[in-house]
Image (cartoon, rainbow, N blue to C red; front, side, top):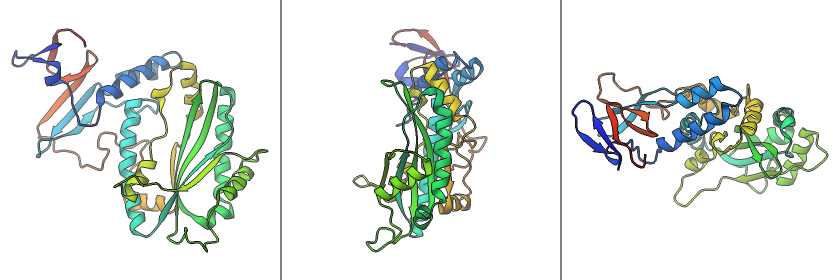
Length: 322
């Protein structure tokens, strides 16, 4: 059992007594993912790789009145491909989506989930294919079919990799907001899957029928529609699943300078009214709208050492299974 000593008191503790535990939030798992990504990135961008490697090595938690901990400060690198920062953005995005769709649902709107794809491409074509995907979606949004039915949307760009065929799959996930009467049988604006396929094919200028999906939001047992909507809005980059420097670099290049998530219509209006900051550039410490904690409140600091998060004043004195 690894043993640690507190330099302030001289007391010794075992790993399980001092290691960071934060409920369902597994900091150690995410930090190790970031280290793995930094190793892959080192092959083509050493400077950014070092920033990702150093991300989250300092975590300061405030002890709030109920005895629980709230993140108070941290050294996040803010790199788009850092799994630790992606995780924080995902938490923030889920909370913001919950606020936005709570407001829209109270105003009587309903929502549908849309996936828009095109054929996989080689790595050398990924940037051009992603350009085509996004410009085609802009054309689709200007079409009568879309404008008659959709009054707002959340759009996420995702790129996945097929290792068997060595190909890339850029696609869009869209949570589209519709009027309250959208699902009525006599609603002429209702979009069928066949109509969406034809409209998306025209927008792409394709000579094939692209794969699309359109469906109402599915609620799990005991889940509210607001929570179901928020669950759909996930941060779209999953760099921790990539195992190759070449693949990471290809996706990294294709994503540079692009908005990965975008709000439009009544969803964007609700976001502005709620005064929510930008998930990509905003605060990654206070991800759920918490007010900054008073400076004089008691805090505890964890640092990344020995492959663990341990309190800052502790040192390893017996290494075993660390």
